[in-house]
Length: 275
Image (tube, rainbow, N blue to C red):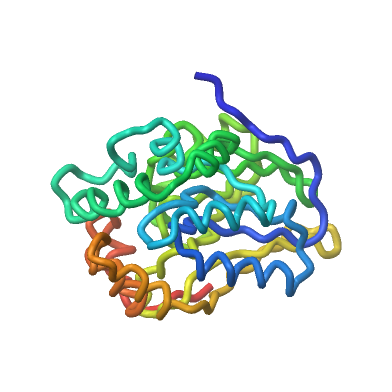
């Protein structure tokens, strides 16, 4: 199947990058305010996929994002929802805790999304490409050839290289793994802005995003933490239908388990994130 790639041309000025909204309406409202504070137009705001996920307001989240007019690619969750699939397609190990939790939150999301929202998800591209400060940039979810591939900072470069080769890109902006990081190799940059719908397993309820800046014609980027009404987000998740463990994570900033993480990232649980 041919990929749908949205070409944005050359972008200038600040660009707001984030991912994994995960049906967290309160976090989406907060990131939208960040864009307004920095005078970043909706066209320069890009989500790396998974608008829908673990939290309590999938329909409201999709509708606010649509109203905002920001850019997004599909995550594996969007693909599964629009195709009417029975699972989230997250590539969790069968029988794992994450797999078990997905059997709660994914049907919940399916039951809440209207035809209007599903039709909107159909419009989202597989990838976004643009030029920024003379660099060719491609936005992927997991990796270019595997939307559900978990790529972390510790993931060897040989697993990142194929996305650069396939897209002829200098920069890959990615999501899916839930952790913010960057990894530079020679002139290539793999940049994950982080997700806003769930904490980054760092012991803080804050979530993460990134801003690009082309001041003086240079490709500059900086990760930022985001405060939002996490108490409300957690309270809404305690509805008897969603995993209590995820509602707790929203507050504690600690993941229920680290089964999807490589040893290095697993060992950093609760230690905070610094760049």
